[in-house]
Image 1: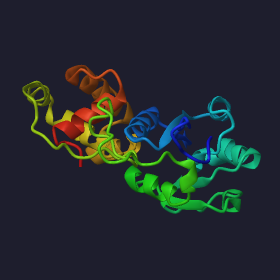
Image 2 (image 1 turned 90 degrees about the horizontal axis):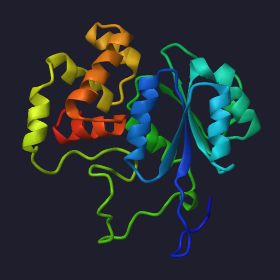
Image 3 (image 1 turned 30 degrees about the vertical axis):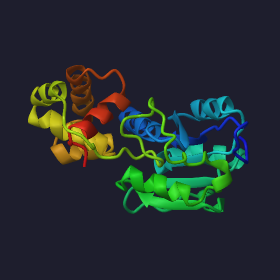
Image 4 (image 1 turned 60 degrees about the horizontal axis):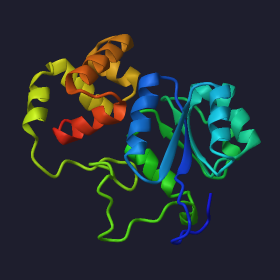
Length: 234
């Protein structure tokens, strides 16, 4: 990872290890982070997959976001091997900071229902600016950049009207599917979405599959972009 950025330097995004239990959480947060230009998401749910993703990143400095249920089996080992630049612990109400996590100087603990946009902002506060790609100078925006991407991985609200095609897709969604889409785009976990709607977690996955088919999305990123285009995202 370069420590300075000039015209001859290839800028790399800072690896962000996402150790989350639920597949939908990993996919949604990966899509959200990819909307920005600062972090390269590395999603994992086992110790071996986390180690493999970090190895693929070439030993670069990294940040980590880890759920407390996965700390003892994954987080503690990783942090003992290579400490992250910044560590965020997601814990349920009543959980204490797990043993060993407090040894990381940049540790911050947050409630599991904290919006992901807030978590990304806190990560940035603990990362040296020299390790992050610089903001683009005015007038140099890429035409192939994500339609609603922001510097912090937080999609911006739509700035134009909804196309007729998107209007048709939106009308094809049931009220429940719109509720699930709003929760996914807003960063809700599978459990939180299921509890809020009074349905099973497997039903949330089924709704997501139908949503992707109806709006023509092949990836979670495209599904979240659709939510922002049509104004469903909070």
